[in-house]
Amino acid sequence: MTPLIYWFRNDLRLHDNPALVQACAQSDALLPVYCLGSASAIHNGDTRWGVMQPGMHRQRVLLDSLIDLDAQLRAMGSALTVVYGPATDMLPKLARAVDATAIHCESIAATHEQSELDQLQHTGVEVVSRWQSTLFEPDDLPFKVQDLPAVYTQFRRALTCAQVRPVVPLPAPTQLPPLPETAHGYATVNLADELAKLGHNSPEPRSSLPYLQAEFTGGERAGLAHLARYFASDLPRHYKATRNGLTGTDFSSKLSGWLASGALSARQVAQTISNYEQREGPNEGTEWLLLELLWRDYFRLLHLQYGDKLFRYRGLRDKVPPIHHDPALFTRWCLGRTTEPLVDAAMHELLASGYLSNRLRQVVASYLIHELHGDWRAGAAWFEAQLIDYDVYNNQGNWLYIAGMGTDPRGGRRFNVQKQAQDHDPDQSYQKLWHQV
Ligand SMILES: Cc1cc2nc3c(=O)[nH]c(=O)nc-3n(C[C@H](O)[C@H](O)[C@H](O)COP(=O)(O)OP(=O)(O)OC[C@H]3O[C@@H](n4cnc5c(N)ncnc54)[C@H](O)[C@@H]3O)c2cc1C
Image 1 (cartoon, protein in one colour):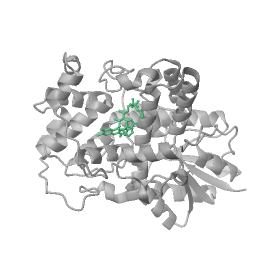
Image 2 (image 1 turned 30 degrees about the vertical axis):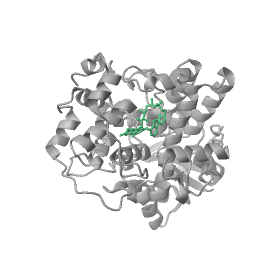
Image 3 (image 1 turned 90 degrees about the horizontal axis):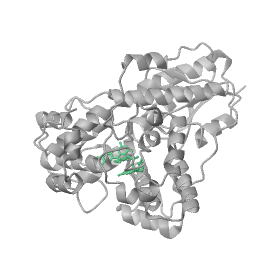
Image 4 (image 1 turned 180 degrees about the horizontal axis):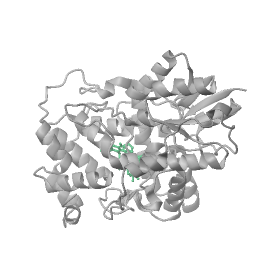
């Protein structure tokens, strides 16, 4: 008998999960585990800005995703063991309890997640990790990861010229190894109780991603249903024209929550785009959507290339002028109490719903960095706590980009708030909608 542990991280799905498929193939008993304590680390968390814990929206979506995963595993004769505590403490204990010979998981190239793997390895447990969250295998790229182009457009062109194709997604396993015998009865967190602790909330009717409504709830099955629904409509065809919208569920794909938790993989989305184009013909909308998924890959590869450097204030710059982060101004920004109505409305939306359009994420990030002269890591930490689609690579990458501390030699991105309001909210309907939290 070869019992293994499969440690679910940001891959809360059964479809297109090569690391899980590999663990199933190599074991005759498998304990699927999720460590709730590991998910509560805030990468940019710092007592200086007082953001240390994920907020209610993020917690809720995570719990819904875990409940869905557990239900799917149970339907296949297995179950998800959810433990509370850091993976580095909990996984070695579980491995001993079930005599597991190794822990399998996906690899995540971010400071905290990488150090979890390193610490686990030091405990003497064998850890087998697999990179699987990009569209492309790093080895298929026309350049080495260390030679990733410094500008996104060069990256995109290099891929187009080399005609690299996204990896074809895998089906879900048809059967899972049984649970190790000693696993039965191992104390697992009761997810329904955890959900109840968050209290009862009704859907926010103004939200563009109302995750409390059944169609937008966390978890793989809702994600697959949304993917099918979105690509059965003509919304993808119009994506390029609508993607800078501010309100409503239709202006962008709203796939981010599922992609961030790994309930859906980017490879599944790319394949669905390709099927749509075969059916409907090539069009600007889906072409543009794929370009956004390429940004997602770009930021992942940037983390593979630079690792910890992306988490320091100066990012990839050698030297930066000192800044004077004002905690009082930062708090006003978080709560939507600045002197800019568009920024305030956006911060109200984020606080009340856990989601914000890409356009407004750019505007409020630029405002904190370039107008309030705040520390970008404080803004990144606030987003990290609030966003239901929080993704370490996308969040870190976008904040660095706007701050001008990433690879792009052209410096930061400064948005004129009044012009943005005129261009994107000329009748102030968005500002009126989110006048209050
Ligand atoms: C300061 C800042 C912080 C951000 N933090 C996050 C984050 O934590 N998690 C996150 O998923 N996205 C983040 N983004 C990127 C983007 O705003 C969201 O992915 C997008 O708004 C999600 O909505 P959607 O799925 O409808 O996007 P769509 O426009 O439909 O895009 C489809 C998918 O492409 C990817 N994508 C789109 N835009 C970007 C981008 N600029 N960078 C990287 N990938 C992109 C996402 O996976 C998204 O789900 C951030 C952007 C900014 C400016």
